[in-house]
Image 1 (spheres, rainbow over the protein chains, first blue to last red):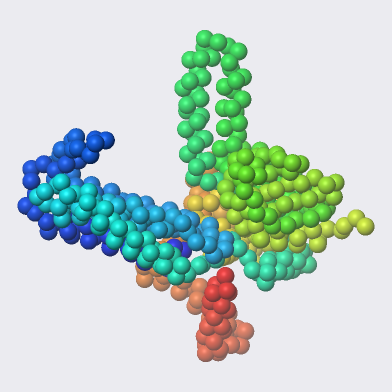
Image 2 (image 1 turned 90 degrees about the vertical axis):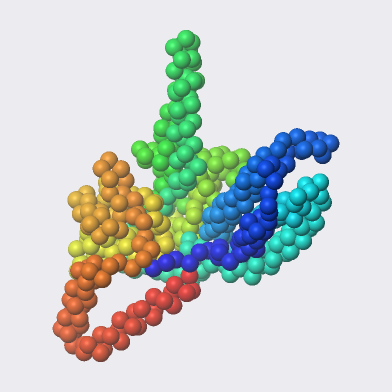
Length: 326
Length: 132
């Protein structure tokens, strides 16, 4: 089964066409001189010359850029919680159109490279303008596929019913989800190595530096492995790292309210991880959505979630199962 | 993802866990590469024996649904992008469909009624996916 892409490939068509057409124009042009201008100084005079085959970079790099943007746009669309305009999408056309115009500028101004920039700007005005307009149009026409993690109201009710049925049948249930993003998996070993490489020689000379390096190293080791949220009929837990260090445990009967929240990791909490801001403890490693838990004692916890509606539905179902204080 | 066990269900607990995890992957509740809870953790949360969860994970590993590596948590294996080979389908799916057909016979269903039932289940699933 081939899963359709969230951000269809045809949205990259203008950029891809520009790459192909510039490659075609460059390939058909000629004969090329032994050297072509490569760099210009502040006064507009050529400062570096190079062989014409290096112009291939003007085709190859944009092609790689388009491939990269296919990946970036797809990742972006996979976290598109509601229909939005992806401003990254027309960025392809801006950048690729410039490279394509430059490549065409070389080909069209042969053999007199004095006209190179004049031709390039003219081609760019047409290619860039048309390409960006086409990209904006395609981006607007692009269908939106809801993220699997988002539940409709009916589905959220189905999750709650599913749990209620399992409780009635005397069965048990558990819910869990994880947040272990790529940046965390890359950053932690990298920072760990840097700290060890710089810390070991430093600590050998100045012993009191050991805790200064040791504490962050310990935090990195404990944090590696991301975050896990687990809920069952009795409690809601947040654990971090491969060792499953428990950083939050709330009994279901202590929960007064659970609701889905959107937040800005940077503006509201100053970054990712375990954060405290204005009376709220927050736990999240990615995204900008989560479930706000308010306890009967008035404490607030924000738990980041890729499937916030589902987590909230689970907590609601669990809350219904436990006897509440009057 | 949610794993709910039904005590009234006659299927062994480990097979219920297997079915729930497979359902969760299909529904997109847990994605490929994501970690499953540790055996001890899941056993505690579901109030079942450690070996039951272990047996479920081994079964999922055998089916290729999860990747098991010594000393590491089980992870959801990459979802198959292309259909399995004919031989694999013959070996894995056909005997189970045949068994279901036999069960249908013992429930008094004709092959035609069984076919209608399968079509209805597929239709229901398709409707759910479209809504999602």
